[in-house]
Length: 107
Length: 344
Image (cartoon, rainbow over all chains, first blue to last red; front, side, top):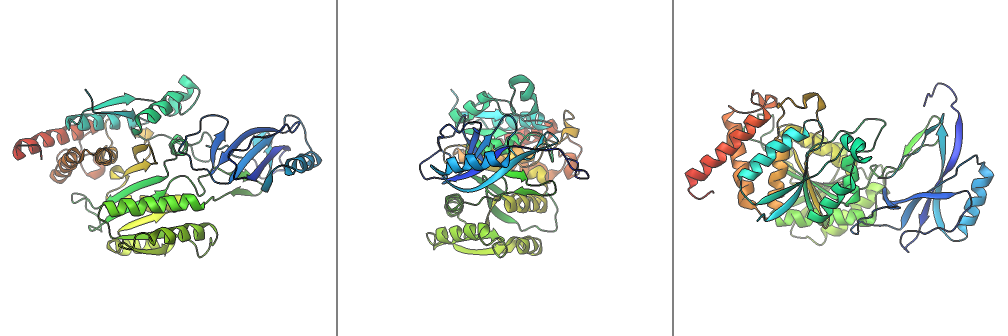
């Protein structure tokens, strides 16, 4: 990202940090917001291979992304619905800057 | 029939020539290892579409033990580290790195014998990073209570089994009171279960200063991931450089032994680099599987070759290539066996 100019900023989703002691979360349908991955302590636990030895704690990073344009109101509505079932400790909006992701992937 | 099947991952850059040399030396110790060769790294991207192919993961999962050459990780962008991915996938939470002075390598310190236990899966290595504005990047440092308890437990258990006397927890809990405070509190909790061992703690910046002033005051260190990365490289430099520094990544059901140095691509294919780091890792691996005699035999032969200085690599003042150094160690092992009459 070129910090000397204002890049084109696009909101593409959110990382939601969910607290649960009931194992890897399984999400309902949330319209345009699709769960892309879930990680625990930085290691991807959904989808794909998970070592049976993996230490899981009660805090999951859940990435929800949207194809197409979204506004803050869409995020607010999504979080309101998510809150009906899940306890979350924080949310981080995901932006692309000039098309480049401003967020990391899990291991 | 082979007694052991071990996954061998040559790695990238100088990795393949190093692992070839190490394989020759370990085979000469005759412990009955069948090597299961697997790939990792950039070449796999073209071949399998991933840095860490499924078949490599399956091999390690099946064999439970692997030895691995270095891999290349781009700085600042590009793909994630294959090394860190392996540690995460198999939850290899304990990185064990011994640092012992090598008599043949002259350094300002000749009295170092420190065992470090680096937490290997948490901290700022959790890969949770965001550009939160156009001017601000953030990286979340994750320290968990169960993760901190288990590395402390592992460290005390290993140290006790190896006759160690004192465990020091390295932290920055004066500033990071929540994260490092949690790590320190977990350490103190576990330390209560090992009253026969002395335990104390030190702030990481003071630790680095005290290490170079008087390393003999330390016996074992247990550290969060980032401090462990830095402090163990400092220790490696104090005893002989990364060319000698071994490492073991250990989980509850799996262990991967590897050099801590990089792949040194500029030296690749030149038969030039020192394979001692991976060889030292192989020695740790042999001890891990219970082949103590073979481990001692290789170690003694290597120390004697280093002390003679005739067939050593450029980094320790010699002109020998990787192959010649390995051959000298193998020859020395044969001499030792003949002299002892029974193979040590």
